Image 1 (cartoon, one colour):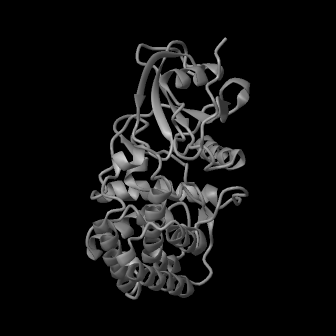
Image 2 (cartoon, rainbow, N blue to C red):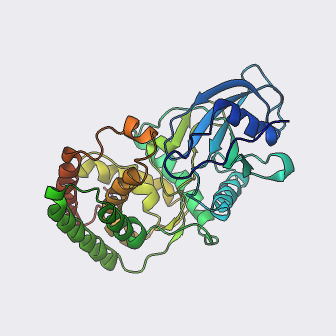
Image 3 (tube, helix red, strand yellow):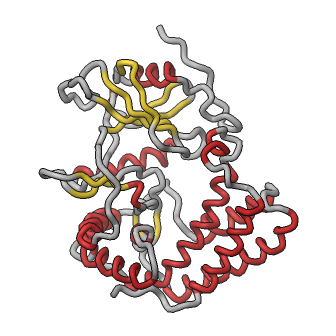
Amino acid sequence: MQTPPPTPDAGLTPYSGLTPDCVLDALQSAGVRGDGRLLALNSYENRVYQVWLEEAAADGSPPSPNASVVAKFYRPARWTDAQILEEHAFAIELAEREIPVVAPLLLEGGKTLNAYGGFRFAVYPRRGGRTPELDDRDTLEWMGRFIGRIHAVGALRPFVERPALDIASFGTEPRDWLLAHHFIPADLLDAWSSVVEQALQGVARCYERAGKVRTLRLHGDCHAGNVLWTEGGETRGPHFVDFDDCRTGPAVQDLWMLLSGERAAMARGLADLLAGFEDFHDFDPRELALIEALRTLRLVHYSAWLARRWDDPAFPAAFPWFNTQRYWQDRILELREQIALMDEPPLWPA
């Protein structure tokens, strides 16, 4: 009989007890037998592994020499069980409607969320693919169609447990947390505090110009890194992964992160995305006034996200440039640029 590892400390070293043996024992406790081979995948918020299987996959499909699944171990104390289960239910709802998302598998006992040794985990089918080519107009339109399908389902009912993306949660609270925990260098504190306050005022003006826009269930973190593009056969096209940040918010949140380059290039990209999106779901053009506001909120939130995780040893190793004098100087300049952009006319599809 396996002896469970000690419950992890969700503070300084949240994953210190998540050894390879613990990963394999956790999966075995849910009926997934690994053959001992693990590959850590690129993830910082959670810990994610490709696990090769000794027997048939968790979904009952026949084994093969390269059969594997993806196991996701959630960061302790970040989400409640109810919030994680709501994420899973949304992904499963989309998959049942034949929208290409990677949804969690039902393991022993018909559960998607399992626990072992203080860690909560889910198991997903492995899907290969590459990063989509966002400078290709056909690719953007294709992705727009699938985001439109996701939103058509997301609009059917609200989230009950998942949080909303708003000024308070992505702007005011992260700003206050950074100040309370003294992350800003003393000689930059006044400049940073002032520019963040001006930026949040600009965000509020953008929301006022947009008016009351509809909110719905979103992917929430829809950037190129969370999309796998496959070639050939019926599976060709985008597969949307990692609904860990799904939230309630405006539809444009799942569109703007796919745009890059100069303003003219972003306008063309926006036109391509919307050409596909509006085949399946209506888009309120007033939301275009929120693009730079949402980008500003993400910048403030991202700094606080890094700061909150700085005691996790994985973060200083992966982000050595964070919390340096230069980092905070660059953030001040970045937010000043955002203040100016939020006062310009909204981006419009071209």
